[in-house]
Length: 467
Image (cartoon, rainbow, N blue to C red; front, top):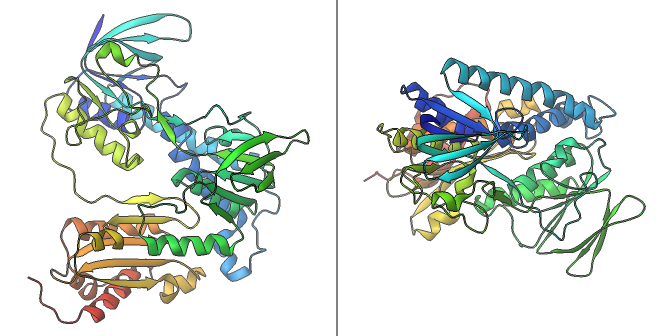
């Protein structure tokens, strides 16, 4: 039996970062990946594909230029599913090649196969050729990610009723799409297909969406979606979904309303991909959604030598945070010192328009009873915004009236996921409103919105001395 210092199951963001970190510390590392190629869900069906699809849709439709040339402007008049897939394949191949090179350079071994526990330190790897082998690890890191939740009542067929994985393989773009689920994945795909001028309807039993995002940002986002004729049926549940003989799909809502569409995307939740791991053999148990409970500081499970990181441990389920979780877990697993991560991390939603946030929302500040003031800048107020033809987008910052420190930054619009890092740095360095007022920002840039929002807050706050 081959013995390793660390065995990593899964090669997504958490797995690959953990494996490479342990290898850089001189440890013998094995990565087990059940997919045909390394990269995990993030590379093949999740983060990279959805963001590539988004960028391709915005480029081919000329979305970013419509502020100048009108809503009918398009770079390519007839856009097909193949147009979208072509760029996707190029991007995925590049990501896989980079990852394979990283593994080779750091001497990380990787095997293709399905892993299952035989005991707390031993895994059986089953390969496609029906062969199997046993491997043993002093420590084991589970970074298996998640898979789409597929309820039995949904008539999935991979063509007209699909999950978020199957959506990437459709052969034709529909004229109409119903998205069931107003979470991050559902909203991202709904807005991407809306940008392709496809009629989109979103259905969710909750009366609100994206509840962890500042309400003012969500309200602005909702207005933009409705303004471009997207239908948001919130507070309504799809009780019945039927495939019709004419190739379309009929949905019956709990209020009796019926909707006919060419395609349904079911994106109401994901499950931890732990069902094939034989967790009981290792003394582990997953929750109802297949997720594993861990110590949030070390990512150690209830079994001392087994760790878990990434989407399989639940919120925030971001590629960026998963990477850090994997790195920290690997360091702890091999006995190295692991510094506590910074308190504030950015959350990015790659919808159209994109949203990014870091720190406390206005609602959270109110709940904590912190006296505060807000500063807002709209992208159309910046010269760069005019140059880009932006008529929407805003940056909001929240400051403590007592300490004048930045408490949260919330952005919607072009470049939001890039711009947020300025606010993140100020948050983690405990900066105040004066940073934005007294510092110089490149002109013309969208980043100048920080100075505008800072001045807006400063004018409202007055010359109050920080304690």
